[in-house]
Structures are given as structure tokens and as C-alpha cells.
Length: 188
Length: 328
Image 1 (tube, one colour):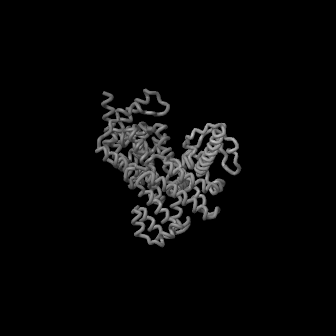
Image 2 (image 1 turned 45 degrees about the vertical axis):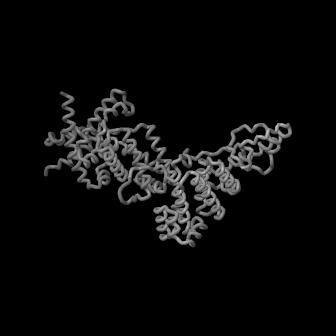
Image 3 (image 1 turned 90 degrees about the vertical axis):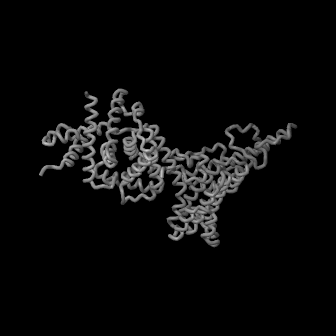
């Protein structure tokens, strides 16, 4: 409850372009938006650029943000989703080669070997996510990468909680098949 | 009734995420759905394990700094104007919106009559005509064709805000915003002037309003102080440079060394950038004329509290609406 109150206060201040309040909102949501952008585009550099654009766009539009409508987090994710769409439109749906990303992993406290294994697993997951529909991708990334609840995802993608659960079920079913194949190929 | 697989999956995922249960425990609970559930829970575990990807900390900080600076800039740009608009009647707000949208000074003259314009020109913060005045200023900035013109407009805007400040009470609710606006205009003009004529015009403005600026320092918001102090320091140093040059000339004449060469600093009204430290050892009596400087030479210009400059300048700043270049 306190968090919600604090967030509301921060947003009210940010609407008056209070730089400190905006900085705090950035601290609260940067990692989630960055994670979402990364799993959508598969490139750290592009994810950083998109995340930067999300917050600059939010700054530009925040005076029109209405607290009663969509929660702030959902609003940010909608901006992010639009920018990711723009990104693919600009690149004419050219998929990013994520091989180059492996060496850039910076997971804290891991040795290079562990880090590389993690990067390979992550690459498999990103490739598998790409086989999903747009809505399924949104649900999976928001639920598992951004750590959002079903209710939060529902608000961000403007669907009911039941619809989110159905999308999650179909998406995980598909991922189970795709990742299972990857697993079996690696095994034999 | 057979439980819905969507609900089972969701419950299992939540339990696994929270560490309440393992995959195997979930599969044991729903053993009649094991074949269906197992690949899905394995995939979900892979997703969770792939987990969070963290940005490079330096890049994250860099973007944060940029964002905070942009927010600060927006605050400066919009603050005073928005306050004025909030208090203006709806008709005036609509007029202001129209003015900004068309951004053409000629259209401004067509749309609003001469009387309204005259009233707007003389208006003070809090007046319903004040937003019109600010919109006109903004339109001029947007119409300025070159940097020189924009620089001159900054000086002119600073002069106008100073004039307004002199006409409102120091306990007015607009006082602080006005001081902030003055500091912003001063900083924008001061940081960009590279033309002797405009620089002198700017220094003259500061000289003329030295008492006013010194007077506001006590009540000025912290963010506004560096720009005001810096401008005062500049004119203070100018005065000292001129006095030092006079003293040097006197010495040279006394010593019969008058070469007839007039350097840049010795020209009346010439440009003298603030010098650091060395007074040349020839300050003599001329440097101690009474009543010359209330601002001491060794004044320390305070930094803004959040270490963010009032503005970050580059040549694209003029006439732009800030650094936001988001994709539309």
C-alpha cells in the first residue's frame, strides 16, 4: 500500500517535471523495461536504446498520464511495446543476430564459464519466444522476465486475467515443445 | 469436476516461483496430468532460470543522468508558463494553445488585437494576459533564423523578466519562479554569447541590474544562484580588468613606456573573460576604489544541489523543445 502511495506521489511530482521524482521512477522500472526490451529484440545495445526511448517518451507524455486509467507500470510497458514494434518496422522485421551478445553478458557474481552457459540458455529461450504470437510473447516476458503478476500483465495488455492465464497456458505449451526439442538435440 | 489445466499450471508456476514447491512436488500433486504438465513446467523453469538480464551499470547511469537532465530542462521550460496558464481563464488558455501551435508571429498579430497585445506586453505573472506574453516570446524564439538572433532574444527575455521582478512584491507567489526564469535566461545567454556586441549588451544588462540581482540572491532558490552569481562575478572581473589596465597604462605612462598599442581588454566596453588568480601585481590604488564591487573576487559559485547543471548547452538547444527525440 505504501508503495502504491509513494508511487502515486512520485508520479504526481514527475508530472510537474520534478527531476528527482522521475529519477526514482526510472530506478523502479528500468530493469523491468530493459528485460522486456532485451527479450523482445535480443540485443543489449538495442534494448538499452529502446529503454532510453521509453523513459524519454514517458517524460514527454507524463503530463497527460491519468492515474485512474492504466497503472503507471502498464503505461510504461505499452510505450515499450509500441517502440519495439517501431524497432522491427524500422528494421523491416530483420531478426537480430544474438550470437554477438554472448560475450557481453554481465550477470553479477558469475565466472566466465557459468556466464557463457547462461548466455547460451538465454539465447535458446529468446529463440523459442520468437516462435510465439505477439500476445503470447508479451505475457511470457512480462510474467517470467519482468516478474509481473497476472493482474499486472492483464492491465498492461488490456485483457482479462482469465485471458492472460489462457495465453500463458498456450505459450508455455508451445515453449515446452520448442525447448524440449532443443534439449533433446543437445542431448543426442 | 476435473480442474482446469490453465489453473493448475498457474498455481504450479506461482508455487515454484515462490519456492513453496519444486517441479517434482507439483507433478506429484497432479500426477494424473503429469504427461501434460511436465514439459510445460520444464519450460517455465527454463524461463525463470534464463531470468533477469541486467544492463551495464555505467550505461544505466548514463541514461538516468540524461533523463534527469531532460526532466530538469522541461521543468525550467514549462514551470513558469504552466503556473501562469493554470491560473488563466479558459479562453486565454485556448488562445495560448493556438498561438503555440501555429508558431507564427504574423498569425499572432492577426488573431489577437492590438489592445490585447499591448496588455499582454505589460502583463505580470498572475495576469490572464501573461500566457500570451510568454507565447509571443516562444514564437519569437521559434522564428529566429540564426543563433545570433536567438542569443539576443535570450538577453531580451532576461531583461523582461528582470523588469517584471522589479514590479512584483518579493513575497509574491511568483517571485521564486521568476528568479528561476531569470537565472535560466542569464545562463543561456551567458553560456552562448560569442559575439562582442551581444556580450557587451548582456554585461550591460547585468551591470544595470546589479543591485536587483544581488538583492534576490538571499531569497533565490539554490538552483538559480550559480547562474546569477556567475554573471555578477563576470562583470565584477570586467571592472577589475578595466581598472587594472588603467593602472598599467598609468604606470607605463609614468615610466615612459606608452607603446600606443591598445589591447582588447583596454578598449572601452571590450570583452574581458573572467581571469583566474593573478592580478598582475599592478592593481595599485586603482583597484581599491570604494564602492566598486559588492561581490568579492574570490567568490565561490555554488554548484546545483543535485550536481545537474541548469542546462546542458549545445548548438541544437536554441529553438528546440529540449533533448527529447523520441520516436513518434
